[in-house]
Image 1 (cartoon, helix red, strand yellow):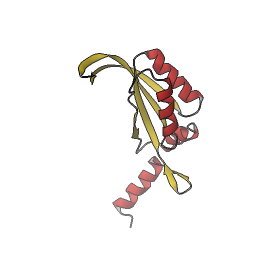
Image 2 (cartoon, helix red, strand yellow):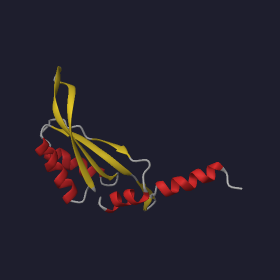
Image 3 (spheres, helix red, strand yellow):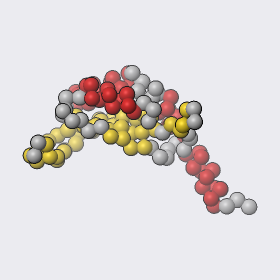
Length: 128
């Protein structure tokens, strides 16, 4: 008899492949930053994708509210989302710092815990 736990594990295995790098498991990530201009976001995106650090990039215009040097600020920014892996994240973060105009750019990431096997493999194959 197959338990509900067995069914869930089989379904999860179909959704969530793991690539073994040595004894470590590689994790896909969404890496984010914000920029002052669309052009700056495009420059970072082009460099990251052309250097194969990231599989793809998305740019969204957003309205931001934040505190900087003791003052409340607001303005239009551009949120850049890059799809990559944890193995490549340090290089992506260095690239963002190198090309970014802000004194303190936001650089953070989210793990992609679930997804289609083929899409996650595509991220892995295009992020080195």
